[in-house]
Image (cartoon, rainbow, N blue to C red; front, top):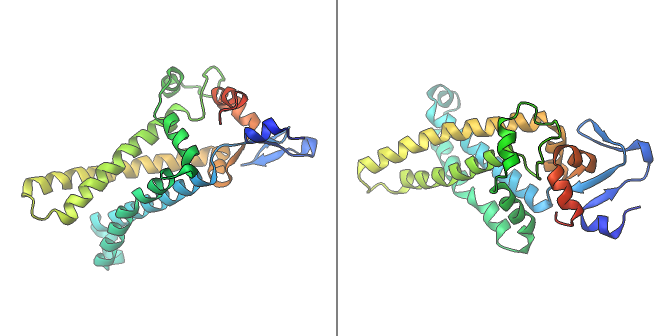
Length: 234
């Protein structure tokens, strides 16, 4: 039976004993789950991911001649790229504008705070040994979030300069082009790495799809967060 305290922590227990909960091919014997990402966080993630992937694809079509030649219609590609670029800040801005973004704000604070065990995680060879007290996000997830969070405003600003600041001296536009081009490459590599890592952890991927994860997985992979859940801090 689920207690009121468990509901407050986002924990549920499913009847059925050994039937357990299957997430990404793994079974949680006691069937208990916790909420990892609420609906707002998942919506922001997928909306932003769709826009960023659109930017990477359209950017590739514009910058890689062979790909652009296969598709053609460069003016349409440029327009899609511009619209997607302008829309990138919208999902997170809307989410942070009201009380509905409380979970997102809390997780952004977590992502921006590196602990000693996070730094050790980045250097460790055996990261799932249980020795490191990892919170809700590990060092790799935090590093990826910081790098992507830094890259997107830079890409947004340089993109605005390239599209509208035509009256600026050539040296500014040349500099903006240089930064934008290399930023595109860095962002593409970060996104590719993020996708590969997400696919390698079915439970974490399922959390971004459905919101919940097995409590046993939390205890094994994120013991510091497990303590926070016990203390009533989701």
